[in-house]
Image (cartoon, rainbow, N blue to C red; front, side, top):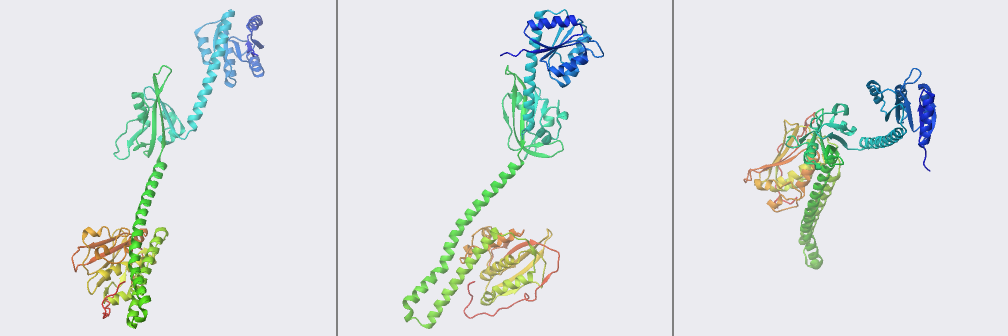
Length: 520
């Protein structure tokens, strides 16, 4: 069933109004009302909601048809066709302002009336669809998370959505009519040189353009924002380029995530390398002391009745010594695992107390090697974690004893540096380490003993990890010349406070044992 279009007639001459009504009825329209004044027209338009209004321009009362049309159109979207006996330019211009859908001169011709009404209805229908489409597009562009800028064929901005406003620092009213390159300013992140504007490239090439990864948007306030974007030409139905649309987004978080992911991948690769080296170290270093344990235990099982008491005691000493070596290796491996996962809050250290504890742990070695230990009476205060720093001193002192001269002469000290760090050091009097071999000493599971041919390769790796976790660095200075020795060092952040005193670290001489030096 076809619904008839309802038409409201606004005409102050009743004879003309009835004539128009009859004509409309013959043409198949439904006349929903007649009004002779502006006030009556507004009231009946509100009540009947017509699909079209035929409006006489000259009406009785204070309002003419043009004023009435403006008021009705301000609250109700309805097509209006004007009727008039006058065709002067002034009246025509006033009628245009109301966005009239037609203009008929009296006396009316029925065919012309029909054509004008149908054209007005069709135009209004298309206009409504266009407005709905524009509103849908406008809402969509304003709602998406990417910035959108549209230009005309000459590169002048016609539209910006809120995201584009926020990223560029330009509001849409300020940007409208500006050249795209003035608002969308790009530079290369590394070279700092200008980057070609993708919207202009799309207009000139007629192709979609994607932005290079290193592009940075320089906002109006000077802020630099890494972005990803693309631009494409806008074409009409004749395939003529009428503008360009640019979409872009802030990729700061994505870049940060990629950087973090790369760091995790590097850490994972490093951990895998450490794990492989760890497996080799464990296999070698645990096997080394395990062999004499098994060997001497087998000898005792098979030949026990024939062994003298001195031989049994000697074998048991070797087994016990090898067991202690294995225990030390396992302790270091456990410490390495702790350093990897433990979060530490550095605190002021009593370095004199820590040095004393480390010396006591190595007291047997100091005595066995008849070593001298030279140190200051006072120490600058630094921040760290006492159990780890004690282990650092134990590693450094142990190496100084094993690879120093005979007898070892070990010096320890500290220097307050200009960068706010304290450099602690251990110097021996051994053969030193040649420069080519120094760089690898603190890498995971690299042995100082690859040069000296003893022990396990965990200690210095642990030292580096602990010190770096506390905000410091490790180092070595050595000429690789016999007798000049090596200086191993580590740094920690300095703190304001008292200087720790150590009376026990004045020159210390240790008795020489008759059987020479012992293993640590």
